[in-house]
Length: 225
Image 1: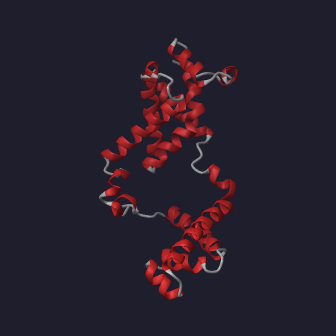
Image 2: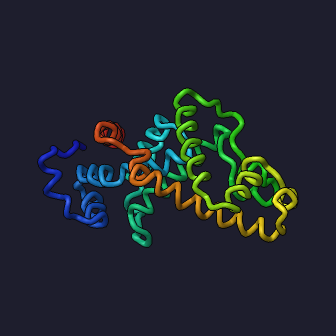
Image 3: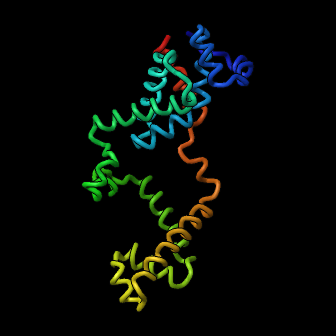
């Protein structure tokens, strides 16, 4: 099986995923490239969110595409192809992470809440992560400063300083239910403010650029040829 020449790709871009799947199953295997290029970023982000490593995410992608190709006749169209493909990638990513002891299911939250939602102690911040943390801290501090009086101090005492609801109420001379209400409003305001401050930058996070797309496509075709 060979990759499609760049000029020929444009001839098939109007085909739906289902149309392409049908053609690939019928023998036009080169069209599988269209499906990979069409969904590379989505599959990458799903894998990257689980394995938290770019190189390993690419390995997951390759295996997911190979698995999907091998079982393409089993795609029953009850879900969209994108959903079916992403599920394959997620399953592959979770399986890899579990084999390495780096994945804890949220189902454990009922009996071990601290373990299931806390930070991963084994991660060692590198300079890049520290830079990101510093930038995020600046954003958070600016957003907290923009909170209204009353909500701002409740948030700082409860979430930054770690005081209990009762202790916060005692410090500020307000009722406990007022602390809870103000904290809820503060979190909602912060969420909105941070999204506004980030703006369009968020849509470019974990982008999957053309050179990486080409590498994945070539590697998959080499494996399923």
